[in-house]
Amino acid sequence: MYKDFPKIKFPKRRLDGSFCVEVSLRVNSPEPDVLERRITTWLDEWTETNRHWKRSEAGSTGGSVDFFEEFAGPPSNVKCKNNLLRFRLEGRPAAKKIWKDWLILRLLKELVGAFHEITAVEEIVDCPHV
Image (cartoon, rainbow, N blue to C red; front, side, top):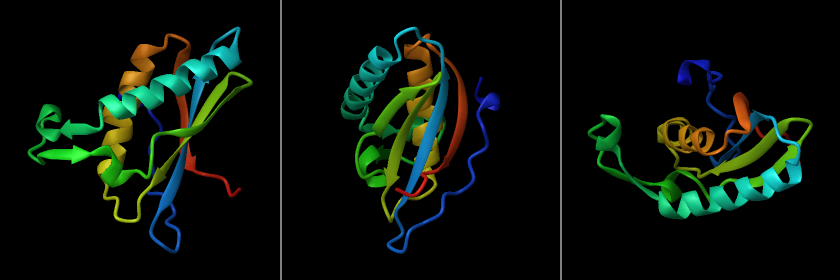
């Protein structure tokens, strides 16, 4: 399943070293506003429940890592429109490449598994300027 995920190029860092990535998911839902609210709630709850990750669970010997060492907060700015659901992740200046593992091996894997409405990961890109 993950071989179909788009390849993530390292994001552009801001002057302070932080970054932002936007994840777009292809969805099929007759009620996108309801799906948007459900996924927003799920993301907030998932972040709180899964904040600490024992990397040995993923075959790594890296010990325990904290979601908030890599990210400034839970996924935000969830929007669902035109069969696309988007959300953003704000990376901390000190974030290492572990942020990609958090996103692909944990968050997206579980999100796609939890919502049958998600049909594909469309893209992962630098956040557009606001």
